[in-house]
Amino acid sequence: MADTILLAKGVTKRFDGLTAVHNVTYEVKAGETAGIIGPNGAGKSTFFNLLTGFFIPDEGQIFYLGEEITRTPSYERVNRGIVRTFQLVSVFDTMTVLENMMLSRIRQGRDYRSKRRFFFKSVYHPDLVDECLQALDTLGIADKADIKTSDLSYGEKRELEIVIALSLNPKVLLLDEPFAGLSPIEIGHISRVVQQLSGKFAILIVEHKISKLVELVERLCVLNEGTLVCSGTPGKVICDPQVRECYWGKEETA
Amino acid sequence: MRMIKRLERSPTLILAVITAGFIIFGYSTSILKITDFIIFCIYVLGYDLLYGHMGRLSFGHMLYLGAGAYGTALCAKYLSSNVFLAILCGILFGAAIGGILGPILIRTKGACFALLNLAFNQVGHFLVLVPLAKITGGEDGISLHFTGYRFLDFSNIHQLFFLSLISLILVAFLIIKFTHSPYGILLKGIKENETRVNFLGYNTYRYKLITFVLSTTIAAFAGALTTLNYNYANPSFIDPHRSVEVIFATLMGGAGSVLGAVIGGAAFMTISNYLPRYILRWEMFLGLALLIIAFKFRKGIWGYIREI
Ligand SMILES: Nc1ncnc2c1ncn2[C@@H]1O[C@H](COP(=O)(O)OP(=O)(O)O)[C@@H](O)[C@H]1O
Ligand SMILES: [Mg+2]
Image 1 (spheres, each protein chain N blue to C red):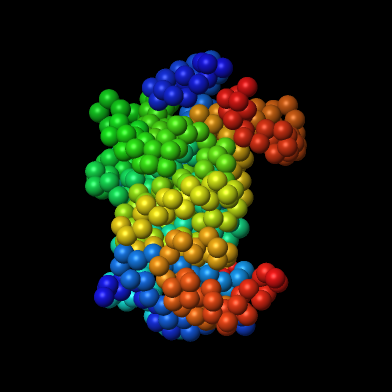
Image 2 (image 1 turned 30 degrees about the vertical axis):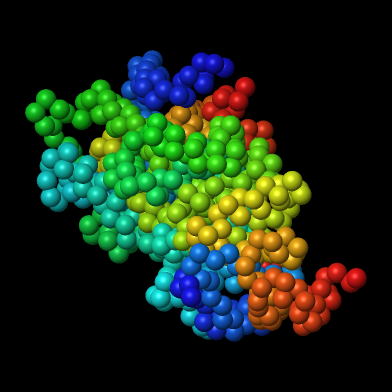
């Protein structure tokens, strides 16, 4: 039995009148790779926002490593190891790729805890630059280091976002639709990266399309209109008649 | 073009150009006037830290300049005749006002931040004019005479000119250091997408507050020097109507760079000091200039030069 790392207990989030997430209880176990699927507007991103502290739930609680974090600010959660990516890739377009990388590394580097270094020393410290280039190289984008991030392709931005997430030393990594908007080749690339990371820390992936997740995750849940409908191994979930009705029924009329 | 790139890369060169520029400008026109220009440039630099670097537009930055000016004047009048103590007093007063209002203001952004600053500026202006008139001299302000300190005597216009210039260089140096440091990149991040910075594990509130207080402190420094320069402090130093001047100067020069701020400050002061001699309703031309900048030179004078 693996330990629970992240636990949502009966969380509910309403947006004036609309209940985006309704009484969801869900847990992520240490080291597992889990997936949540659901049609557009099912509340997947909202659920992520609750886990990461972007929203505070109207009801319910969230626990991380046994401690309640329902109201813990998001930066604090990141520092404790809950790291996320965004459905719409979110990197800093006005900076270079290297600067993007530095901004996340600095936070983790112990050297930069000193105020003098943080406020007055040049950020282009050889050790830091090396470290960042190495990190970028893990996804093969080190040669783009000096390019303005706005000039990257969407797929490259997604890769950068993932490198940044990894540099934050995640204990649990939350990926919000990491394949959305990517070409099949890029999807393959990101899939392989996720497979390599599997087991190193807990990963929770939210996706709109079920097909991308089947071979990636050990456990799959379905979220529909804010409620969890079904959960189990990917094979079992696909065959569940309830899922077919609420999910496939709407999305892909075969 | 290569020269401009080189200039931008080298902090020493930037500071040297600013120093040389003002000395030449000052001694070929009027020292007294150019001292005013330099002090205004310090103010613009402080404002640019908040607006250009962190992306927070304020309509009430005169409050902090005024805090510095009155802090200095009140200290000189009631506490001590030591000039340096008076300047320090002004700076600390501006920092304190920033530290008190900051936690409220910095939670907001956009129009709300801009207008809340204006509101506090109006309150400050009113306080100086009416309820605190007994201390601040109300409409008339406070007249002062600063005595010298050993060989230093800032009633000597040359000495004051160089005090202001050294102050400007010091502030510019600090800001250049900031922009190249991790803190500078963090500010860039906050300007573009604050939430995202939060999700990198930074408590953005803390850094926004630090930046805000730094900005008010620099504005107060400029205010302290203004009092020294005029030998008085009066309500026009805290007048919210004048808050637009610094925004104008920042936009004119180009937001987010030290050279932009200094060029903008000098350009604005040149227009507002010399144009009225020739044209009665010169403000109209200021408006026209703003229109041209808004449509043609989005990134200001310096932003335009560096891109050609
Ligand atoms: N900030 C918000 N304000 C109001 N409604 C929102 C907000 N965020 C999401 N919603 C609504 O909540 C529902 C769930 O959205 P979301 O979590 O983004 O779904 P998904 O990610 O599964 O596509 C949608 O109906 C959406 O319109
Ligand atoms: Mg979504």
